[in-house]
Image (cartoon, rainbow, N blue to C red):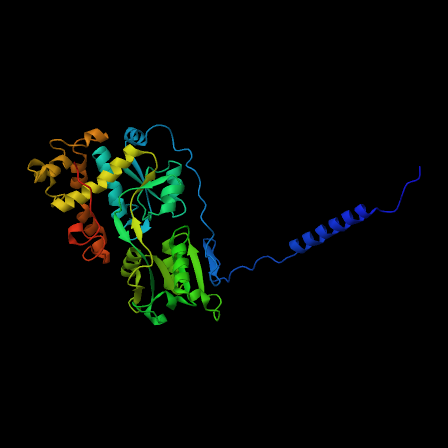
Length: 400
């Protein structure tokens, strides 16, 4: 039988297709690599993202289910262990700072200690675990920490999509910007004044999304004469953000207003003036404790520990007079809160005097606030963090 040596139409098309694939593959592999950043900004811990007229600054965050958090009730596990594992920042001035001797202090740390005092009658029965913004939620999901007190904003997506729940707000904050007056910024500067600037912030937070939304709302992304409109440099640590701001790599930095105020006190050079703007923050940032969903008993302990500090502040119960107030309470609510008649702490799995120990060992809300935040210029008066009787939002449900 004779063999047909002429290629068929199908064979010809197949050869052409293979040849095209090879050519395209060669073109792709021979493309030059993306250029590296200039030496001044080429750092392994730095990601640079540029916004081009309305293009999102960051890809959407990924979320996942809670995994491997152990079996049984969380409150029982923590009580059996005898210590509370509490996640903090370690880099948040006045909220949680690591001292040269390795100790960690601050507003958030004191609330970790308050929960430990309620659980064990000992505010020092706590292991403080420093976490980056990228690590914090995973640490909760995997059970590495029981509680997060790490200047974390309560948002709908975080509350509903990643298996976590938020406790009472301990500090009401808002995102602002800080820049040098020598660069033309003032305390009355607005979002529109950021055009052409390099803005630095922390990665894996809501800060970039807030900034992008504010830029779009201000319509400065429509200015076609400048490219890029704003350059965003993101870092894993706010300490690094500050270092590059001081070095002049960043024109502007952005984070919660409380952090900017504290850092200005700590690091502003004597020959410079740093300003914080705008006067009304670009976002609402309610900060407070975070824990796993569906751990109601543990959540009750955390929540009512916070409420106990607020109620004590409301009633003038302090670390110095709490024993006297317990012996001669001002009203029935104070008696219940401090372990007297009709107390409710025993039904929560705690000692009857659990909240007395919180106030005695750590203090009421105002003591915790004043001790940590007043020294860096963050005062309660006239702020959202004032007592509800003074026009603020700090209020607790009744202990009855």
